[in-house]
Image 1 (cartoon, rainbow, N blue to C red):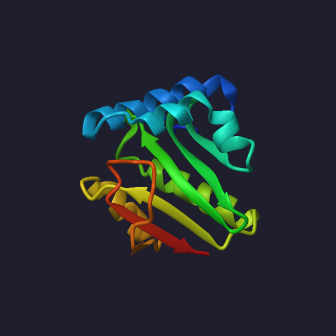
Image 2: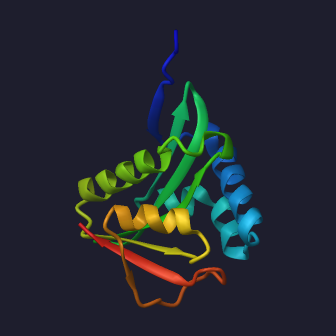
Length: 156
């Protein structure tokens, strides 16, 4: 008999802060490098992401952190989707879809009209996910990341 995995999406829990950092450092180190602004965010999650009105979501499978994503408040009507990561051993289970849906629902509940994100064209799987949810490419604005070479937005 196959036992179904219990998949939960939860909001920020400080007990999982190290998971947020580790999952993101893993993909950053695989594809790029951890940049100074990444470390600034990791060192100050509460003040940079949470206190201004953002959120961090975790995807748990049977209580184990399988993925994470941050929603950073940009202004009164815009959030930035950032630091989306799924543990390699859980990839292929559409967990990023669950995280994306939580982000969109969060932004709508906060009366945001737009979600923006910065990415890199090398991350084809991520770009396909964003396109699937209706994000469109827009001109790049100045930002803190050397690796960012594409900006996308979703109008809510």
